[in-house]
Length: 267
Image 1 (cartoon, rainbow, N blue to C red):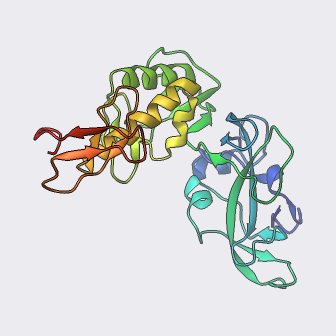
Image 2: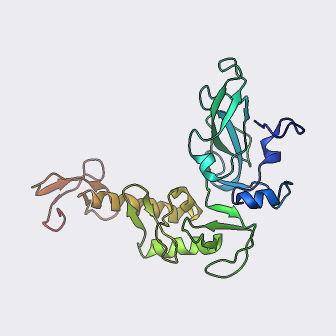
């Protein structure tokens, strides 16, 4: 995995040339020398071995043959370059592509364990970033090294501790938003428009118990919005989708209880 670089530099590993994706084009021009502060840092959720938030490694492969023998024509300049297909091209040196220019496919691996194979990938937590501009937390006003930046136009920043507290309190109050496209999610706590978190793996920062509750509440909200009902048996919680005019339900795939369906439940 290499970056084309300038003619004088030759091809260099992308990890040595890639600067932080938060930087604007002008800031990139002002910070051409890659150092510890402005180099790219990534955070991922590792579900295969670590089961938590970890430092991530950006990797690239040919979008056509999936080979890793690729020299990118340019480094990705923003998260859209990394997450959106067919934005960055590169020369693939595999026997199948034989040096042809192909679109690149970026993906992530956990930096905390040895790769378990080609399928060992991690989910990018792209809202979690190094606080290179030293912006104070929206809630506690502390300046932390690692923060979550909400996807609002203002780019409000929260430290990870305050983000966990925000999620925990909304979860206890059952005030997450159930979106048909995004799932069970939250907006910027400042109430900004168009600020819902799209990658729900960010909520993996909750404790295991809280995340299990988050999944259960999300599933229940999905069933209710789809016109279904929840099993009335205490401790079951199985979702049941009912036909119109149904007067009785049975929890077939759950506890097996049968119950009359009230008018309120069938709405």
